Image 1 (cartoon, helix red, strand yellow):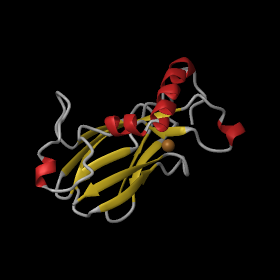
Image 2 (cartoon, protein in one colour):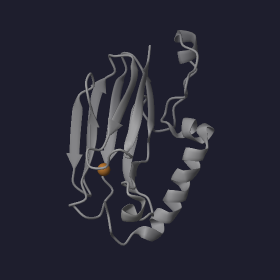
Image 3 (tube, helix red, strand yellow):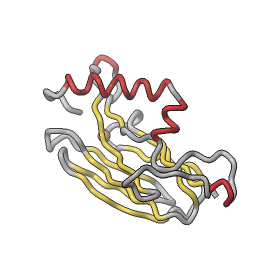
Length: 159
Ligand SMILES: [Cu+2]
C-alpha cells in the first residue's frame, strides 16, 4: 500500500492494466509464455509457442499499485501484473515474484491454499524465484494476504 512518489509511472501502468482488464484477448496474450489452449490433447499442446528468452512454464509476476485513492475506494488498489497462469498437469512451473514497492514496509505475498500450498511474503524491493510441479488439475487462486479481496490471480492447470 504505497503512498510513495512513483505515481507518474503508475498512471501509465494503471491504464495498461485497465486495458488488459477490458480486453480478454489482450489478457490471453499476456498470460505467459504459453498460448492458451481451449481444446485439450497432445496435438494441441504441440502448438504452444513461447517468447524468445523464456523457458516454457516460466512466469514473471510483479506487484503494482494502481494510481487510485485506496481510502476513497475502500478496497486495496494493489494488483499482480500477471493474473492468469495457464499450464498443464505435470509441468514444472517457475515463478519470479517481484515486490516492486519502494518502501520495505509495503509487503506483498504470493499465497496459495491446498493443494498448491505456499506463501512467499516479500518486503518492498525484494524478489523470490520458486518452482512447483502442477500435479493437480483445476483452477486455483493465488492472492496477497495483505490486499484481499482485490489482489488475486488464477492458476489454471489443464489436463
Ligand atoms: Cu499485496
